[in-house]
Image 1 (cartoon, each protein chain N blue to C red):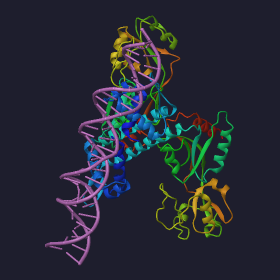
Image 2: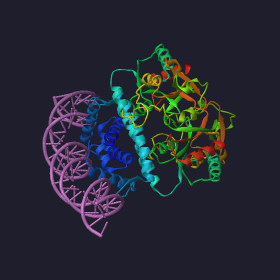
Image 3: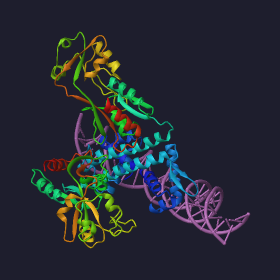
Length: 279
Length: 279
DNA sequence: CGCCGGCGATACCCCAGGGGTATGGACGGG
DNA sequence: CCCGTCCATACCCCTGGGGTATCGCCGGCG
């Protein structure tokens, strides 16, 4: 199967609309239609159910969408890792969520730098959920992920830290005085809508909550009484005036894991993992 | 990156010879040379070191070979799984080495068939090392692998059984009377050369030992005094007249694992794994 | 009920680029 | 020193991927 066809199919399968998919792919609609039916002929099966009013996935199409994304990720990773291997810099790229696990990260970097044979670590701070993408697409060699928020299927991982979660609230808020909360208490607080994080493409889904890009912004917005958020215990070390943290007893436990691609042959990644496990 | 270019590169990187690679790809050498240098230009790095007498991989080339094989496997898997999803048969394909773990396999199939919601299991018996390929290339949904012989990087696994190994010898052989053996005892027994298994393409590497295709053949050849072999304990149940098994005390322990692709969403695979763990 | 508008498929054209053959140029061995 | 090996270059051909114009289907609306 050709990469081109697969990319086309994934675009159509995601949009469920040939016209929009063609637009996204910067091409006209007819060659896209043709490419898809050609792919269907090659595979000997129909992938999309077209009525003249709507497009939907067949079972086979759903399989190809899931498996195809994995294959495209692997291709992109091959390209990115090759490009990075070509640069003279022998560094390793570590991706982590901006503002999360700050203390752990600092300790890890410090301890690793003291190891014999340590190489420079290029830290990429990214938005929530982006570490996983960076790792899968080959732009990072190793990442700190947070279960259950990030998916770890197909990655090798080691657990580093498990913690509960706290609600971060403006100090004047009625709920701020409680000794503990439940998720139900926070589910419908109309004056504190949940913040909105950017998508992979940097855009924001519509909604009532304020748009945020990092934890500093987020805590400032909490202090201003505009939003509230549930985060792992370790944010306590970042708390500022005007915000309080209240344990949420029934929030899922968050496990910070260090993750890397399963075929990694990098000594630097192995060293980082070894160091992290010794912390 | 294009699939075609990647396939070409992998062929050249494996052969380290443009002429032979072109032959393998059923094309002439010049367009292959051109395609590779075009790929190098696109990636902005050289992948192969050519002198007019020999070709070798650069560091970046080695990375692309490793990552590229993974990506090509993922592509092939996407295609195969889509094809299989299109067939009406709701079965699941289980790959296992012919003759290995027979008792375990029989128990597993029997127990799984009794589960509610069990689907037909299509068992593929293949040569050693081929289960891994079948799984990675999407022709199988789940496999029984044997560590440390099969690689499990990038697969999800559960351990089922760990056992020692025995040497299978013709009953008349001098070593057959021993209570136990060491690998060194078997390393240089010129009258019992190791058997040769077929490669992925069905051909045999040259060597002194007899060519075998399955364990029945193998045991017959042992009985005839033509070869000897070291296998997991569980072959004892297959022993025939004329052969004896002697424990090899320093042979590595063999662990039978059930393995599946990490992104598998198949209920049937999950059911098989659950059943296997309960045995 | 018929017209319109949205959407995917078809028809037809064009040309970029992938593949082939012939040949050059570098280098090692006899 | 010449020849054989092997990768690169030059040049040609034609497939097939992309574009525009248009059709056919169908649901909604006046």
